[in-house]
Image (cartoon, rainbow, N blue to C red; front, side, top):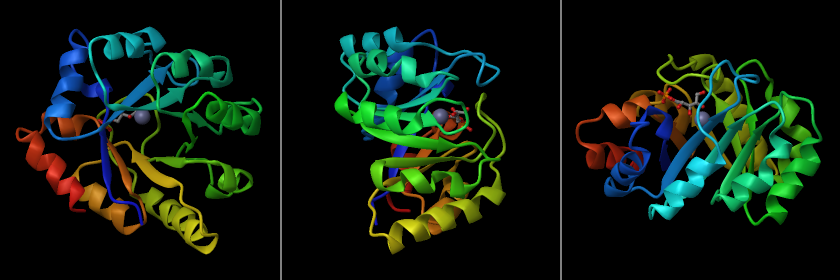
Length: 218
Ligand code: DX5
Ligand code: ZN
């Protein structure tokens, strides 16, 4: 079982000072940063683009970039995000494109790959890809906005994916995103998750080192 990783989402940071918000993550003793890319089409919101990631790198940010592409055509932007400094690139299962080719392409670009499931997408949709992914991201809210309530009905999906992982001896990470705080994070951990995206709960925590330490002990 993987040790728990907390990946704060920069979406909940200060968008006028993103490099400072990323520094807050490093100073909490963490090594992952979750970056939410939205295209106003796959989800009804817009955030930033690859140039923002590149600028964070130029500003000295050396966190592991966990890049979550909420785009209708993610396959068109893989090179741009790899070049901008992504370490892991996750793409959604719902839009129409050649998922297998895109997942393979991410690895040839030197990044880890991840596959994301919206709440309404059943775990079974993942099955053909299980042997060729580094991470599965289970959305625990409908993607598009931070600060939404955690969907407890996603716990069964986590358990299902975790049981496949064990049965087949696979080692991909199992990540959750949306409404995750220490209490919902613990429920996800019990259901098999090992990687936790936290936007609102992380940036609102007054003692971020203690918050990070509590996740590390989940
Ligand atoms: C939602 C994004 C999340 C979001 C989580 O579409 O994918 O990463 O930032 O925010 P919280 O933790 O506030 O639910
Ligand atoms: Zn996300």
